[in-house]
Image 1 (tube, rainbow, N blue to C red):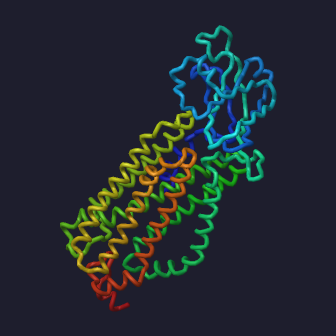
Image 2 (cartoon, rainbow, N blue to C red; image 1 turned 45 degrees about the vertical axis):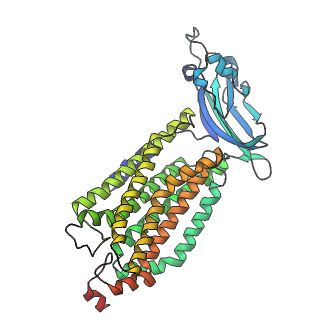
Image 3 (cartoon, one colour; image 1 turned 30 degrees about the horizontal axis):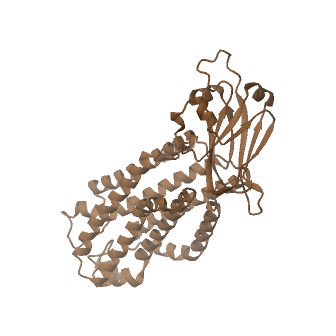
Length: 433
């Protein structure tokens, strides 16, 4: 098990993208010459009081190399089609580096605007420089927005503002819910009722999601103070989130698609059951693996986009992930339609309809929010998708818990027919209870 966790975690830990705010690195003349300007980072400034601080370890070397920082607003121009000299002239702000620390204020931003930072020196536009390569220059760049008091102390860009508060409230909700419902849930699991397997997997998924939220919160807490955060916790949050999504996906596919694949050998009156047949297990595991692979690919793609500053390009991994979730939602819709259309009992039909809502909410929240985010401003889209997806998945899990634990619906229906409901026990066990 430890080897499996290490195999999943290693790609995330070594995915080294630059996210801005506080960036420490090396100005390389060769990289600046090859790319017509070395990409450093991007940041969304808002309002008045935006500040860029550049600290150098060797200002004399920077002055000798005629080092400069170029700031481009929005970067909607086709800079790659311009010559090197034209690209340098297109910069809205130019900062000459000759001191140990440079402070550059940013003009008023209304609405919030993304700025991209590039490094150049005297070798940048030389095709075949005759002089030997100069030594590299170590730097630290701080990008700051104004805080509530108007002072430039906020490391969060405009597209990330409020995410820290959201995760703090989310963890508080987890804690309160755990204090209230942990006891009844433990009693339900000890009874090993008809929904025992589903409840165990759903509880594991929710606990893993809570770990993801905690790791994200720890990263953001440190991020708010130093602008660099805790990279290990950030990657762990992505890892736990991927495991949580895989657990819920395996649960839903095993319940719905497993019944469909094995219904030729099972009575039609026993739908929506947990099936451990090779076909259903292989299909469920295949869906989880496909989703996990796309999530890992998306992480690498996002790091590459940030590293090269290409925010207009859409990741193919993200597009395929949306297509996969929509396809699985359509598949489950057809399965549940077969169940609901042949069901005569109103109570059982309501049970399956509620289960369908939980499935569709979990599968379609991300594609729908990605599509709807286009109506928001550019700096709001990331927050809308992040907050919306987390909330929708929590609501979906709450609906599933209500179905699996509800005595007012499930036990009332199961008392009418102990054969046709999911995860039903034998009549003997029911009488014994």
